[in-house]
Image (cartoon, rainbow, N blue to C red; front, side):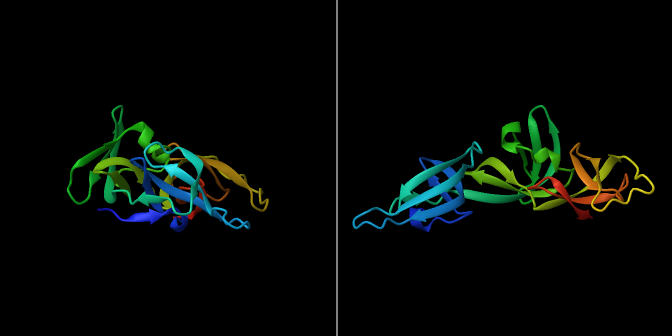
Length: 190
């Protein structure tokens, strides 16, 4: 039997299950009333792990939730086609396919062979977790103009996955750059 979690104990990044749906907590705020007999309430900003929908919910401090049956599996990206994106489980060597809806914007960062974490709920894949940053090759960018030395000047670069980001003027085609997967921005040379 899975352990039960009190609403008041849910913190940022906690996982819990309500109505057979797994959630991750993005923000938690506890409000304690000043009046005698008032109920302590917990306001949570949560993401539904099945649909990626984000919303706020308020619970009583004593409400209880189950721990979700979630597993993280290491998998390497193989390719994408009209059926979805295909990954190779690093332990069982089975091919796992995620639909376009499960992928979100992850294709902007995936290159063949990149190892990521797949999330499974009750044994079925529901999504993936990207690393904080990935190394991608610059496929196209304008050459820097000689004499343009404005501090902090940037230009647009198209990366091997098709993602376009702003990079410093000294970055050239063919260079590898580190890209933040959360902010979709340049993080330095790789």
